[in-house]
Picture 1 (cartoon, helix red, strand yellow):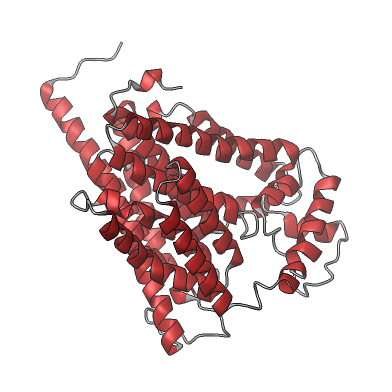
Picture 2 (tube, rainbow, N blue to C red):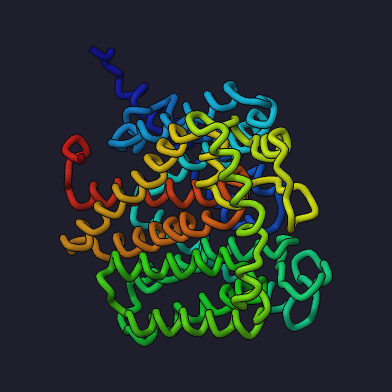
Length: 424
């Protein structure tokens, strides 16, 4: 039995919880808005969000969305795997480094995202922040493409691939996460009732982002955008198919114009992933099939086992595929837990979104949620050929988007007047 509170104490507690929630919202908002402007700003706002989250759960966990999230055990099981494979490792220091650098910049942001969708307005604000961030970074890429210099940081273009303000052509993977969110802009603006106006708005928001994605030549990001678009069409039961496919076709054409060589069959078949990285990763997995070599240890493991790359002259670093990475570093057991977490959250949220759209009482909310979900599906596709799983900026943004998706689902269930305890 809980001790009764006086009205004064209860009011003070509510005020403290409100302050904590504002810190969470401020931290996440700043993290998203200033994301491309540098590591320092991302870390500052991630810390602010983390402090707010800790205070919120300490003061009123019973009011948190996490408490009512029915499959939160998958998240904590996944964290348990990461801790275990840091200790059970050929090089515990590598795993410790990965956990330490991502603790508040990625894994905590998953929980932050869940708590930031307490109203339809808060979800719309998050959507606007993500889209605005993607658009201004895309415009920076347009400026760089036209003038040969990055407008935000003033860095000159190196080679023929656009980098925007991220100093790397991997900025395309950032655009792959932000572009799908523009699909829901008409739903986030209630006064827009014309389909033509909505399509123009989507096109205007996507154009600079797709330009930067195409100019960066980031093939992983292109796969991610295609997967996100397909996911959005699927969850919406193929509404607006023709305009969407036209947008994808335009993006593909732009990519071919910018980077014909990178997208040629010859170049794809000679890619170092196919010839070097993935065969070596599979070789590491076969040596340690059950539990793997330990968190973030692929580079050390393949050298220890005597594998030699034939195409790449430098160290491989990581398998360029998070699924192969977990097979190597955590074995079949860890790989299964990874799929449970990433796939379980994707399927749970997809089911909630589809049910919400079918019910039709809060359609705009569920369309926005579907856009966040499609962005996350795009991340899962990009992850087949992209970064180290522990690349902080990429993982941090993906965990944020996943958290927002789940929080929006929980709030949507609340809007649809379903009791949290009845959610399965």
